[in-house]
Length: 404
Image 1 (cartoon, rainbow, N blue to C red):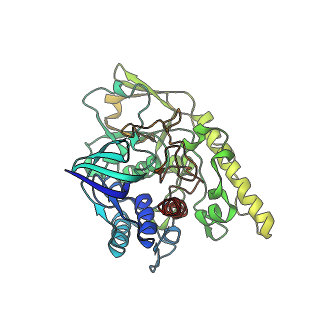
Image 2 (image 1 turned 90 degrees about the vertical axis):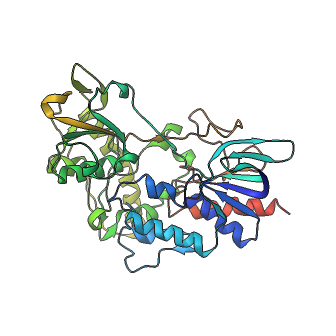
Image 3 (image 1 turned 30 degrees about the horizontal axis):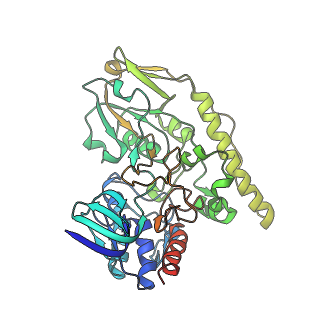
């Protein structure tokens, strides 16, 4: 079948729904298409015990700011999904679920979306499918031998959902650290293959870390303030919201008994090999953390606040460069080494060398084609629950202004 609509939004996560909310207020005819359900990524690509790493008060979706009894808490997965679903239901978001978009093209007059429900023509399209759709695997990931089970972080559910034995986690951002903590606490031996990740204390001077991120202006950084385009892939500071929120980084994981190793290099002869770079990696993370601390120091100076954070001395750990699979009883490798954009189905030349959309305030060089929810789309907060509404308002307003 073929149908037509003024605006098609691809993706029913927070970015697509925020755009839909503003278009609904302006009475703009539109549809929101998703291959799954509302908030599908939150539903299916997070583990059972997942909770937000940002406090509830920072959920500032348009028309759906958090107003519950625990503003300083951290919503569990089910609560967050219910919050987003309730928001979509309340403003009657025109979501068409289970409608996967396989291709975005154009004819002489309209955009043409090839979907699992047929062709859809639209005058304007907002691609809100998220900035990181494809899990990234490091080089030589295919060298892990059978019978060791390999899974992506998005396929991990709980400790009981993976085979018995020790676990190697490759990737040490927020997800890797949280899975390492959970598996260690369940009694598993855990090896964490570390990358260059920043960290920060969960609370500073009586305020949550995110309060400092917001008040210091760190989330208002723009892409031109980054040292390089590749810096868009830098992970968020290592920490967790689990159990009310607490510090979680290389130092805390090492103290609890998680074994830290260097960058994954490959496997062979029954062993998994790691680079001899753990000291360099930890120091690099400390440097990134110290750079973030400068924003906090500047805020303290402006407001005459006490400096709440002193950097610890360098961390030195004697790390192994190989782990014997049989000797250590390795049963599972979990890949949690980040994501990359995957817009190959969007058949327009509007992407940079890294696969990110080339856009200005969400607008691409193709008239009527917009992007939403891209990491560092306008600012550091563009893709998060605190800041996505700001970008959505600009995109929706541009659509309205050019629909007259």
